[in-house]
Length: 199
Ligand SMILES: [Zn+2]
Image 1 (cartoon, rainbow, N blue to C red):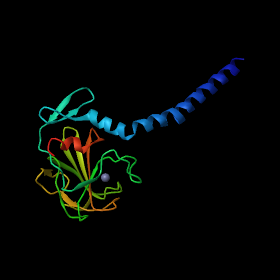
Image 2: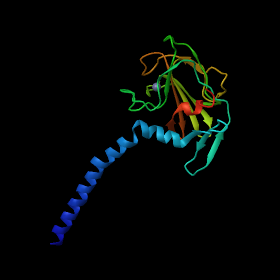
Image 3: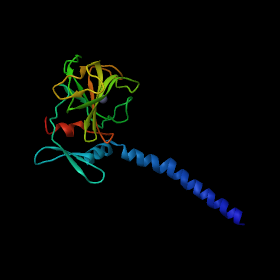
Image 4: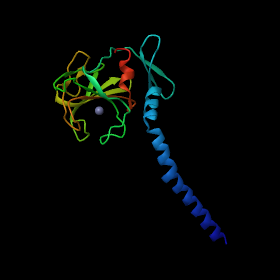
């Protein structure tokens, strides 16, 4: 008798587990990964102080760090894809902003959006083609993708006046543009929030 009971109990647990894993979790993931969810996480991590227009980083424990460094657009051009927009077939949601030359040319100079140290300069299978990643301090990193040529080396200290590479279309790109991405604590955030103080 007790064996039969425990069998039904086990079956019920199994069914509940299946229900959670196959139905509840995918729905939760879908809700979290919508454009709103993506932007919502970004808005919790990075904000612009309305009074003095400085950018503020919010730690998970409630600590706020004010960024006072100069911030610039890494390249002149038009934004062809915003942060959080669907980007099939490359990404479910775009992790940065794409900035393209208005005439579709390549070779425009790319600058670091903020001073920092180069931690990657090369090409791998990530789809970003020739790209540079900079550690900007305060748990901020920035990535500049699809370069036609890299003009920087790992370990170099760079500021906003320096040229780290040139706009191109290496990697997964259908035309010349810079994929400009900012991560905070490794999480992609909307670069426009950072650039708001210095449009
Ligand atoms: Zn992109």
